[in-house]
Structure formats: C-alpha cells, structure tokens
Length: 430
Image (cartoon, rainbow, N blue to C red; front, side, top):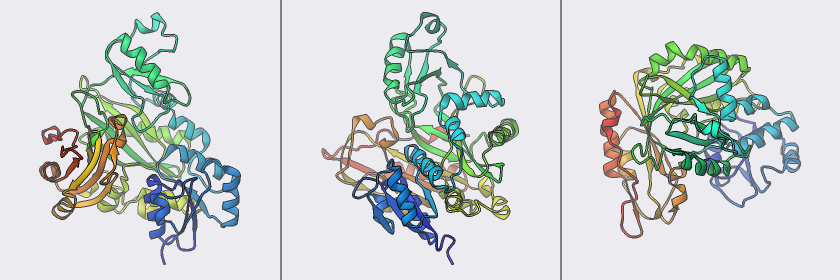
C-alpha cells in the first residue's frame, strides 16, 4: 500500500511551482486536486482533478475542503500561496507546519536578522536608511552596499550600489517590490561564493540536513547575482557545524518550530572568513534539494511536509537517523543554466547530458518558442534548466560541469548562443 493511499490533498496553485508537490503526492497514492483561477497549468495537467477557484477566495476554498473531503492543503515554494495555505488551514482546522508569528519572523529579512542577533547567530551588518534619506544616515554608509526589499523573493528588487545617487535610485526601486514598503541597506560582501544551510524540525528537535556553496552567475559585472552552480556539502560544513550550528538549533527551538523544513542563506566575508546570514525561508526549497538528499541518504523533506499536511506523522526516529550532512561520502552539484534575453529557436544536448552524466534530477523551465526578457535577467526566471548530479569528488564535478557547458546549447531565432556566460570550473577549487 502506498503511503498516502486514501488521502485527499488540495494543492493551491496549478502552475509549475506546485508541479512536483502534485507529482510526489500522486506517486504516494493521494488523490490530488489542484486549483487556481486559471484554466490550465503544469500542476493541473497531472492532478487527479483541476478546478478553477482562486487561491485567495477563502470562502470558496472552504467549501471545496468540505465538499471534497480534503485531508490536507499544501502548495509549492510560492510564498504567496503558502500564506494562502496557512489562512485556509486556520479557517478549516487542517494542519499547517508553522504559526503565523513564526512565518512573519522568518519571511521578513529584518525580523529574521533581529532574531539572529538575539541568539548569537552572525548576520550581515546593515545601515539605517529611510525614504527621507537623512544626511546623518547617509554620511555613515561605506560603499558598496546592497539594497533589497525586506520581504521579496526570487532576487527581485536587489541592487548593488557604489555611491549616494545610486543608493537613492535603488532604494526607490526596491520599494516597488516590498509589500511592507520597507527596504534594507546592507554591507555588500564581495564574494563569488555564497553559503546556505537546510534544516528539519522533528517533534521540536532541530536537525541540520544539508549545507552548500552557491556560485553566482556574474560575479564580475554583477548583472546576474542569481545562483549558477551549487555544491553539497559546503567546503565550510565542518567549520559551520562546530561554530554556528549549535546556536542556530537553539534559536529555532526557542522560536517553537515543531515539524517542518527550512533554509538559511548567508554570505562569506573574504576579509575575515566569517559566515553572515541575511535571509531564510520557512518552506521547501525551490531548488528541489530533496532530490539530492533522497538519492544520497533516502531523506525527502518534501514528502515529510506532505505527510504533516495530510495529518500524518512528519517523520520517524529511524528516518531521522539517516540524515547525513556529508551525503554518505558523496558530493552533489546543481547546475542552473542561465540565459541571455531572446526567443528560443533550438535546444540541443539534453539527452546527451542525461545519458553521459550521473544525473539524479533534471528540470527544464523553457522550451522552443519561449522568450526570456531583459527584465528576467538577474532573477531566477533567467534559468533555462536545473541539472543535479551525485558524484564522488571535485574532479568529477569539474568534468561534469564542463561537459554540460560544452554539450547543452540553447539557440535564439538569429542563430546565437543564448548562454549568458560559461561557468569556469576553476572557481570550484577547495
């Protein structure tokens, strides 16, 4: 018998963001209904049932829960729909993995950093700046700084600035992406490699699941500071576990998170080697990191989250024992293939990469005829695909990344290669 046999799941969002949630739930035997106000979508296409109810129409969604005998409500990593799921669960009494207070703290960059400071978890230094642009505030700033909305995601509204004039322009632009109309101005840490961690909370105990190093697309011109290549575990894995991880575990136990998955993102200052956190997500990763941990250790945090949403036990002691931040001696790499703007005419080399490399997951976001706009450059929407591989060492990683760069081709209508920039594997040296 499949694990979710007999369970009925309502998924908010019928598009790609919810596709893998629907896929996992169906594979485990659940009856899945996907909903939003649109006629079609990738998640709706594979769901058992697709309906057209807006994910913000709570009264209609409550009727669906009652009439369809829904056991649980969930969605993909869309923060917009996660809030809608939380609201619907509050109104129907269905389980949700966090309280509203926990969600607010973790989704607001300023509140998250405040929590870090209170618990001796290092976070990126920031400056006080308001819309009045007071001289006493501006005079204290040492450039460059990074300007970002306090509550945005997908790298939108983020700018690096080098002087006062650029700061004012960037601040006003960042406000457009902030529902709370609040902007952070932080020290800019110039490093082409970022750091991230992923945790699981099980019955109130906090477990470190995964660490990674993330290399950005464009560290020179800084026009695309989104991820390019991520390597798991991080080169800083042991250092982090000895120095910072104990305080992080205490911090989230104090916050009261009982069962759920979350991640934190940080920068590493080349001046002192210190890890500085700057934001987190109390949710599943858009990068589908469970495909890495499931391949290496058998741990799937997406399945855990679905269990909880369906009223089942989040995990078990035996399953938690499988957690290994060292991935049982393996090294995983995730490659996001960034594109220039243009309309895609031809795609070559996907099957070659799948057949020749140890690919554990391949996700394609664009197809022939699709267009990448100038506005999408520097956001997650710039990525053509995401390829994950499970390997033995850094030599295999370098070989595999080079193979992808040489073999995978996305061509525009004028016959031009749309690859934004080639990833140089010398950046991966330990």
